[in-house]
Length: 194
Image (cartoon, rainbow, N blue to C red; front, side, top):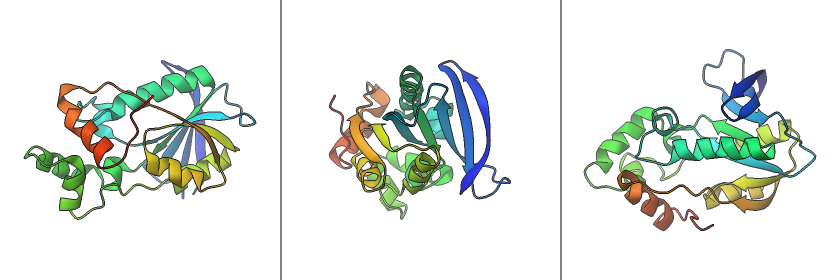
């Protein structure tokens, strides 16, 4: 995987350099790095590793808090000259079709973790090795990691990248996703303290 293309993207949060990473330039769905114009890799970088969530990121679904997490990450990255790495691993790594099947199961009363295992997948099949490679390509050595996910912290912490601090990403639950928050906290160990 390598850097394939990049361009400055003016956004609601300021100017970001969008960099596409893939094995080849024909890849239709590359991983992305949104690098704020004031990014300085010689300093500790505020960084979010965000896994794609089309339903939340694009369509503002209330089943999850992903879209709000992404917006908050972009806002904080603009404030601190940070980076948002956008990984193409929809539905905790099971893809959009299986995610919709998991939603159908959730509508019968099964929680988000059990829905994935019922479909034959891990509760969370995501990996962060690609994010680590992107950080290394950007020259990042030290980060303040914007996350609530202990697995993400552990995997990055075991890499050459130094996680100096975890920065909580606290989103207020909505009535439609209170159960989702509870499952993430109780079964997946997500950290919702500030």
